[in-house]
Length: 403
Image (cartoon, rainbow, N blue to C red; front, side):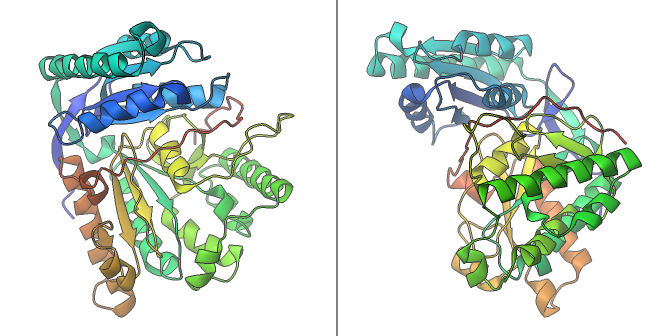
């Protein structure tokens, strides 16, 4: 593979570089979601790249706020419009002020002050147009390379091919990106059931191993307390038999490199390398916020830790994408790929039939990532699949464990 690949990224004040230059329309409460989504729909088939993300709750939740702040600061976001109703806990003007501190063009709008739905939509459209002009005049293009890239990986709708092909190829790509000085983040600790010793042994240092053990034990206690494990009827229909078997396949997507540490949601990796993202709620007296995670939440967790591009492995098939960061969907099932070729970007099934080697598929998937970084749209982007989910949840601030 070519190790001297470069492309043009978007420079940000904090020193990071983005592969997209999006205008993020953010709503601060469910009551403002309609206006925000109508604005996004208006710009869908234009040359203005608008994504919509928001939080539905009207009360305080630090977890959700941390995610919104991480999205505002994300390098793929160039400008921000925050839309609120006016009486919720999250304050639109304060969120817009954070964007301005990042030297990103930003505006805020309160529906109660703007006069309701029709006038707010019209005002927000005008604001987006102004933000777009500011982006055109303000954004600086800079050279970007693999060592500045952050990749996230998720799997969903797993079948027997996920752990034999799809996740294997992603894990191999993870290894290559880490070798080239980049950053790779995987999550789904709830799909490490039965793999405690294997997980802990991957720690870069003894301290990291201890943190991995703590993360594993917290996950196991959580799953027991809610009587919920990350395995479904669809997984069984796809040939998997137990959560332990599914976990073996899911863990393969992390590759083979030492794990540098554990991140909490909305934390960025403090250094290059391979990182585990822990999205399991921390123990708290609040019964409020113990949510059953879904694929869109997992993808958004990875975005909020700074992932430029997401790799989403599915055996049974999925159609979802993600706001802010493009999603490349990978399957190891040839039948799924043929059936859902409009949605799935990459098929790794040739490894199962012997028609391609792991090295060949690794190179092909890596080249697809680079093409995405260079501006080529993924199938989810072309179909305007930009799902997101920001829940009520609780996690302590935590600290990064550096190797």
